[in-house]
Length: 229
Image (cartoon, rainbow, N blue to C red; front, side, top):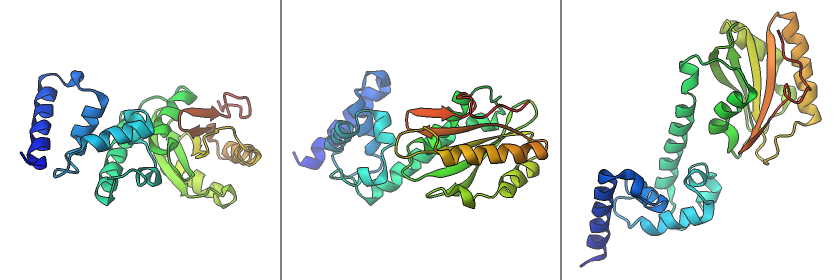
């Protein structure tokens, strides 16, 4: 029996087991099965086990950074695109709350929304979350990507977007790729400056949330920013 016939037979047995009871598959088997759709002509079990060994969990594999994945033997350009599609799918799934007009009633809800999009990103980016007068989500907008130089983020751009969307309140959101969400002095000064401008425009600056992988910091929760009324 050829090597190809061997892994194709194993793959079919895996699919049959999944069809009978998907909960019975081990994590590596579920990942192995997923990988077959990107690598139909390869035995994906070794790669699935290698990915889990390196990143610790299915979530760890999903949110792994591109340069980390490239260090795994067998992870080529085809899989890189496949992974980007899955990461975007996961981010949009977690952003469904925007379409459902959910109420923003806690910094954690903001952090959960942002984490799937930028919590594990290798580059810093700055986003603006907008809400109506009942704190229902309107939109979540990218303002700046790359190394965020807050001096280059103009208040008129942020507040212009809020007025365009007819928002009543806004939440500043950005990520710290280093893993520590503690705000810098620049973060604090920038936030207070924007709060003063928001008051002049009769807009509510509700919070500035900084996310970093599994943690977050809320300037409102920490008493640095007093939530608007």
